[in-house]
Amino acid sequence: MNLQSYLECAAGSDIVDLRAANPPDAARFYARFVERVCTPWERDWLAAYAGDSIRRRHRALWSLWAAKEAVFKTRYSQAMLRDAASSAGAAAGFRRSHPLLDFTPQQIEISPDARITAARVSLAGAIFSGDSEFTIRYRHGAGWVHALCHHLRVPPPSVWIARRQQGPVNESEAVREMVLAGVGRRLSPLSQAMLSIHGGRATGCAPWLRYRYRRIARRDSTRRRRCFRGENQRMPISLSHDGAWLAGAVPVAFAQMSGESA
Image 1 (cartoon, rainbow, N blue to C red):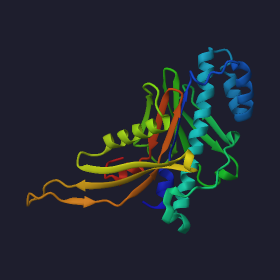
Image 2 (image 1 turned 180 degrees about the vertical axis):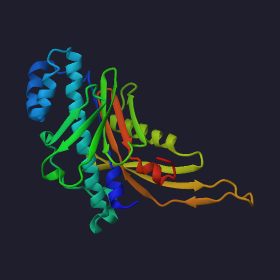
Image 3 (image 1 turned 135 degrees about the vertical axis):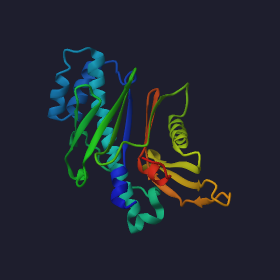
Image 4 (image 1 turned 90 degrees about the vertical axis):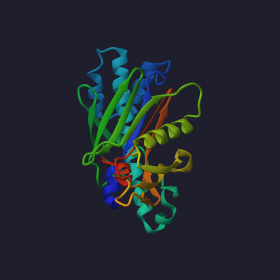
């Protein structure tokens, strides 16, 4: 795959625990929060929920926020891909920290549909120059909302997971284990893989999946099994955890590299 194809396959995922995102002084907090992160159009869209239940208003607001986070993560992954493709970044791959991009929520405008199942994205500002043809897909559950951002020209990620944590755990480790398990289930029975996740917020770069696979062909006419060794592959992924919930997404390019259909 060429660089442009990888850039289009980058995806961002963000989950919000609606029960955890409920401060004691909710009315005052939401007023300040909306003023700080929402565009004028988004504030008008939220105003249409003024007569609805607190639960519906709560879900609408955090659906906007999750989508903005997902868009930013997508652009961050694209920046890391460009970095790795450069002469300086090629040797270090995704380990090399990228200069911190300024996350300005009001430069990302989200336009959800009536049922908040999908949304259009409009971008502004210097950090969003270039390709910006993104769409948002939502999943909702009892007490959570999960937003996924991906390019309009490619299918949604091959692995897209949201799961409730069971008991007290290390969220960072738990979300990685969840995504690795999801990727493992996605592999063909004829494939074997060595998978690991590197990077993340603590390292200053986007998380990425290291993937080396061995494709085992079926028996040929001589009844021998043939093996094809794959090279080490690196694919930016998106991880998120909030409150009791974990979420992750692995781009569709993973399926193409592993020999699976998208």
